[in-house]
Length: 237
Length: 72
View (spheres, rainbow over the protein chains, first blue to last red):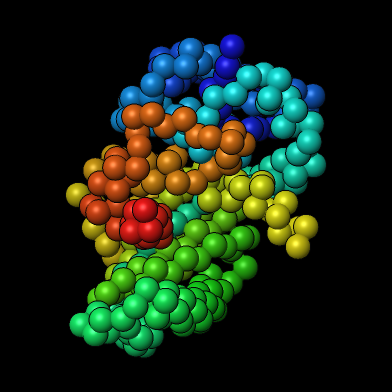
């Protein structure tokens, strides 16, 4: 028997109202020591795109109304033994992550700007080259693109820091250059009590940057700050 | 329909058309992964990609997919 996974939480005794999750299965709380896994029974059937992804999101959001959980990505079903083993191995990391997101929420900022200062192309597709040269040119392009992207991320991070001050408890920024535009996304972890202040400051900041189109959304459960493996990888570097 | 240059939060956010795509982006691209393989047998990459085209959501994922397809 497998359990479908929604999120980890702590200090949760029950859900405020009964929930149906993926495939219509009742949502349950599985207590493992001082942690709670929010799960439902899985019979291994294929997921149905809209219905099941939205059911997953709805369960996580309902828990989020009670406490801040660590959400799982959609689509994972494991045995109870697998889950217990995972918790046994990663207990400290899970608890540290729960402490990090406690009382907080995720806000997302999407940005689209013009592609000024983008790195110039190094490969002319009209001029034929061999596979080796093509490989090296691609490598060179990637390297220059990475440098440029790192600079863009640093610039955006500094700008957010200036505009949001200490409101931001954690931040991920990703910049993707395309042919004509630069698309960026910032994920901010914010104290729930500061969400209104965050909105106000972002509204002011947006006014100052007519060169960029913005969309701000949230509050979300902290999906973007849930990756325990990533944190373990960082800490072991 | 929500558009850029907007701040959309809370209940207002949940009622917008865009919330579906934003929700899909969160649950399909983010969140903790503990199982070796994520069993998305129906909601596969094409579903995500359609969403991304509309929303400009997680373009990094779309680029990654395109790059992998080119390699293959």
